[in-house]
View 1 (cartoon, rainbow, N blue to C red):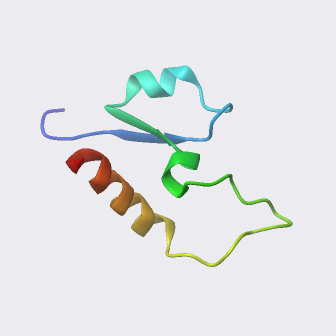
View 2: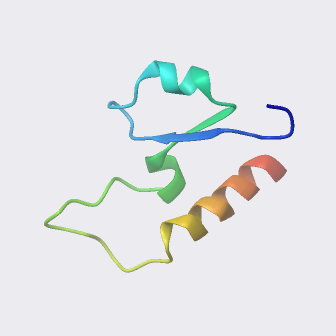
Length: 64
């Protein structure tokens, strides 16, 4: 569709290569947060909601 951008987000080593080819831009989750995924036993520190971090990261990628 014209005027729309599809962005895919996936976890390294588990995301299909087809997803990366099917979207306009693909980002690994680990790149968005800058660290490994938290585990159930170690959820990590409290942070801003994921959608806020995603918006900020995507803005920096498209403007930089």
